[in-house]
Amino acid sequence: MGDADETRDGVGLTNLDQPLLAGGDVTKRDLVDYLDAVREQILPGLADRPLSVIRLLRGQGPFMQKNLPKYTPEWVRRTSVWAEASHRQVSYALCDDRRTLLWFANQRAIEYHPTLSTVARPEHPTHLVLDLDPPEGDAFGPVVRTAALVRRALADVGLAGAVKTSGAKGLHVFVPVAGETTAEEAAAATRALAVHTERLDPALATTAFIREDRGGRVFVDPTRAGGATVVAAYSPRVRPGLPVSFPVAWDDLDAVTPADFTVRTVPALVADRDPWAEAMPAPQRLPAELVAEGRTIPVARVQAMHEGKRRARARREAGRPGM
Image (cartoon, rainbow, N blue to C red; front, side):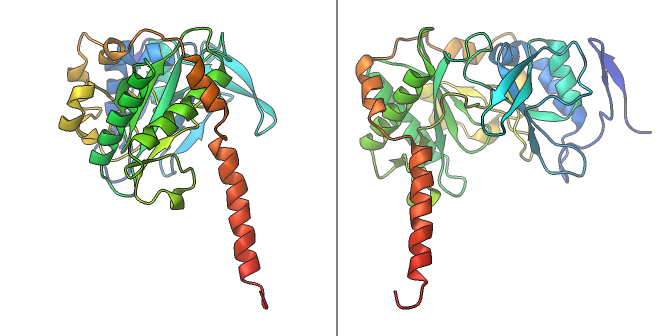
């Protein structure tokens, strides 16, 4: 047969020798072994949070799964969340233990995207996130320089964060916030911090939501808040070699590249420790002035939607005869 089947923690594992990505040398066994090896590090960031995963089935493109399939075992914990966009209840998994993580690995779930709040307190995110996205190409240097700006913007208002690679080409800065912080306050503070970062070096960083307006600058996403998900620390990504979203000390950012951290290299880096937990500051109260400032900044997605419609209308009118 060539495909080795086995059982771990009561979970049947199948087709372990199949390649995960077309043309790659990473197998499903590599994914299962990796997630099992880092379970003590990855599970704290997943537990009690509605989870979306990106799966990669044989012969298909990757897809994001939010709603659990009907064949999900009864022992997988779940929570029902109303989805405003699709006007339906979505049954999300809560990946709290090794058994559930192994079940997902066997489903060829490669990426793990938990919400920023827990199921018990959906209106109170535990972290702010500033997502730094490079311009076209693989330029990591500008992203690292932008992360230094974020760190300065945080320090200027008395806050601190931890940074990790996105596993793709960017960086994520996480800022743990006090338990009473509301989703609205967190969203406002995220907008304000993104704008502060942009102001520190507008030639390097931008909050422009419309891609064509970024002009080769690093995008500081002001919208990762509310019901947003962010890929978990230690999660693999659907990319050649299966890179991993990995915590990096602020002072080490210049010395690494995202490709340094893969399902093959990371287990040795986290043996007996959790660098993400070690790097994370204690939860912090958001400064009232920062939240107040953020409330005056328009929500970028809404602004971009209106601007996109305005530009489309202008293009249509420019194309009319006699205009």
